[in-house]
Image (cartoon, rainbow, N blue to C red; front, side):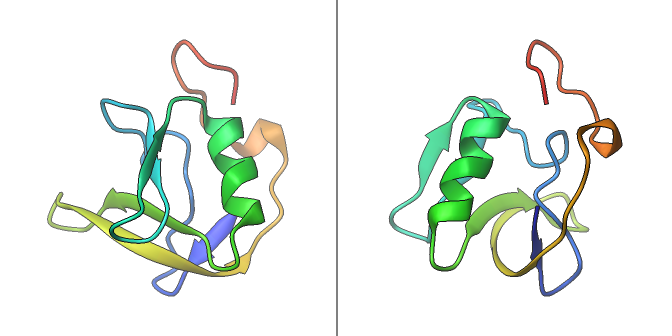
Length: 83
């Protein structure tokens, strides 16, 4: 999983919005419905960018600064989608 400077990571539940997941740098963002597909696209980016809620509940873009390995069983389940 990509991890941002603040320690947040591309969580399949916390990063999901009404269109799925929003990835890419500001001005070139794209919605991706499926978590695994979004994760694959993030892995191909030089710097992965994704939207997630901040502590105030507002959606903002973060950039990944590192990668952390997770196993599927550690991921929260997403309704209607296999994580």
